[in-house]
Length: 292
Image (cartoon, rainbow, N blue to C red; front, side, top):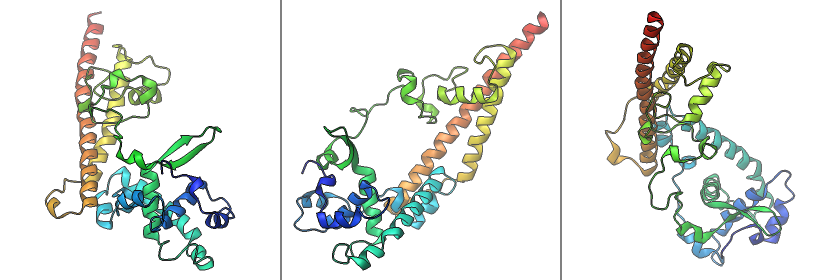
């Protein structure tokens, strides 16, 4: 009961599925779990009984919750993911249930149950390296009881303490989390700023107090501010009037959108502050040029 992996598959079910061209081992396991969840004799019954009937991930958000995400990047990601999964489901069902009704009972292989299984594996599965060197996707029942936070005590780590190679993919977050709001930093992630500087002027020596460098820096912040101002505008106004009567997924969608709005506003504000600092340095630079 420590691992749920392809060793748990039933020979008859696996024999049918392995003949399907292009089907992955992860999809086979997903289809196995859809039926195993309702198997009263399953050795994993205790585990399946502890799982929620709804995971409340974006994949199963209601229409109302999805609508609340309008203007966010997450909306497009969720819609694309659901379309991909529905296409995958349509390739398998109802064909499998019609041909092998005893192996794939139609009442257990509905779109809703398929989506539930997707959420189970996407949110709970792990990659395990076996002794033979193969990397396999598994469910580890006991792992559900463990603390999944990277930071055990729940505290955040300052970005300045994280090696650049470990956080280059963490491109944007609330600038209130940064301790460095000096010129050339502004509370923004350095990898993002460096990327924008190179895109703006690949050959220019940046982060100097020379006029050309300061003007380039000012343009970088102006462009970045425009991007995040548009993002805030697209998300519209806060809608918190009827929160108490919202469902759980609607509250999650609302919280996500409000957090994204807060992050975008913080970036825009930091750009404003940064531009003021740069303009002040530019005035000093030009005054020195006049004095000779």
